Image 1 (cartoon, rainbow, N blue to C red):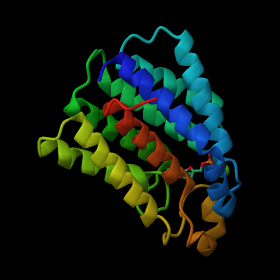
Image 2 (cartoon, protein in one colour):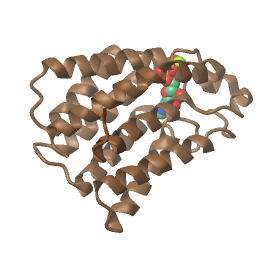
Image 3 (cartoon, rainbow, N blue to C red):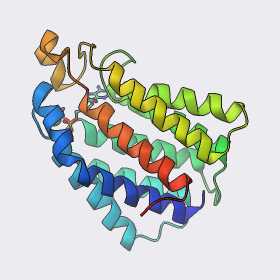
Image 4 (tube, rainbow, N blue to C red):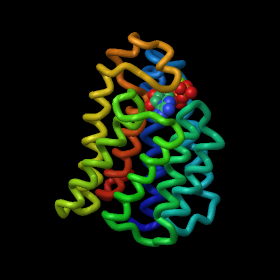
Length: 211
Ligand code: ADP
Ligand code: MG
């Protein structure tokens, strides 16, 4: 993937998040304060606009610009968490101008580690990590098995989707949802749902299908 593919990923993420903002907000209304869709739509639209103006000339610079935009514009717990994820992913790409399957895998892992370090959550706590963790693993298994970018990103998106479903019976232990305790059982985690969208956007762009 080159710089323009990374720009397309951000654009497709913003498009999907905008289309699904009401659904994300509905999920957050059930176990949080009902702002996740609004927060992320604002953040990703700002990131997309910032990229239109910015001279981000490498994939790493694109992701770091997105990270900065998300940190300053998103709000909520998810803003700094996703912002850090994109910044760490961008940093891990250094000055590469073309990102191959192995390198994209390391950057997804860097994103996961960034979220974990900042938010101190673990898989099973009912957060975005319950979608991203299985996605990173599935990506790496696919890549080690010889998958190309299309196959590995598709495996990641599918694993994130399964991870999202697995958040339903979980009890939230982090963020606002944790205040509701047992009442969070039976609902999808909104952050895991938005992670699915971002990874679906990546798979779509990798497959060359982005609109
Ligand atoms: P807020 O909870 O501040 O209203 P959002 O509604 O935008 O922020 O985001 C909520 C989502 O953030 C949750 O569904 C969860 O996935 C994620 N989240 C919250 N706290 C953490 C954490 N400590 N680590 C990882 N993800 C978290
Ligand atoms: Mg919220």
